[in-house]
Image (tube, rainbow, N blue to C red):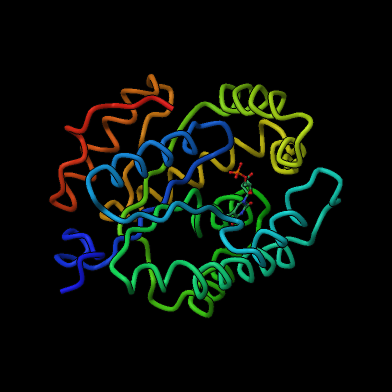
Length: 237
Ligand code: TMP
């Protein structure tokens, strides 16, 4: 038995966890904190994001998110997102899961359901068809859906972007510029997804303090997967 494979990986198959929600819900911070906890628990964990996660998918991210990219037809936009997702699945997610690692992704296909479906009006059946083509039977083992009043979320993400104004990520705000009513449709979409799939999805009240949300997430991981990450000392980041 090679020394380099941690015990946790030998005992259980890979786990795929996704974080979803509108803009400014604080989920990226929680992805970092959970990955830190899992890593300190000895679980090899791959943090990633969508759109993105691989070089090719990050190129597509750039095309879609830059504020000066103009508008896309909703189906074209979904096709680009699913092209990025395919790259992400084939090159990063599936190989990591096959090695028994955990993958924690900041957004995945529920974002397409919410943004391009509920937000932009693309037919949900088309999105599911593309999902099957691109991801087959792969579904996240657990999805946290971060819920917040869109006015609060947009104000939060505006502050974060202002802090990164002179970086490329500071101009990745094409969706935030779509305004509060768009974010309201997203919220309804995410709530509907959580309701339709209660086994997979856990709704998180993102208006709670950051440390409280971290504890909720960690406790859910312990409950679902029989690990002990909630009792690990908190390291704020
Ligand atoms: P974020 O990394 O700040 O969450 O930005 C990603 C943006 O892309 C966010 O506004 C949501 C949007 N998005 C979609 O519209 N559809 C998708 O399928 C994904 C993954 C993201």
